[in-house]
Image 1: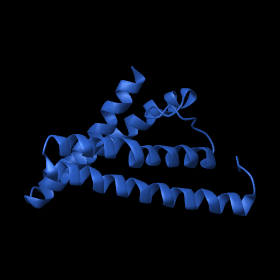
Image 2: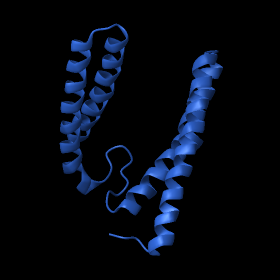
Image 3: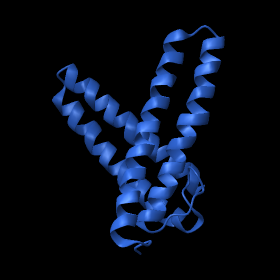
Image 4: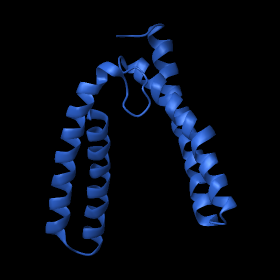
Length: 136
């Protein structure tokens, strides 16, 4: 149940932030503020769920949650998986269904995930060079 709750609240954060942006564009500042407040509340709830889940691992990847370097390693692996497996697979599926704009979108996201992985890896490398070990 905690994984489902975390997932639902995480998605709620993004939905509410998206709705807030749309409300801003349409000139509804009160609605935008209400959506942003709801997003912040949902984010705090998701953090609470994650704290309980931390003992069993990242709810999205099952990777260990721990030190900054451990978390960076998990994030790099996750971004690499998105870049090398997940998005290319979805891009190919969209291409086979002749949904070219979606295929291009997934291809672009694959490239973005690779850039994210490289940036995270660079931070991890810098930490390892500076400390020479996993700083807990």
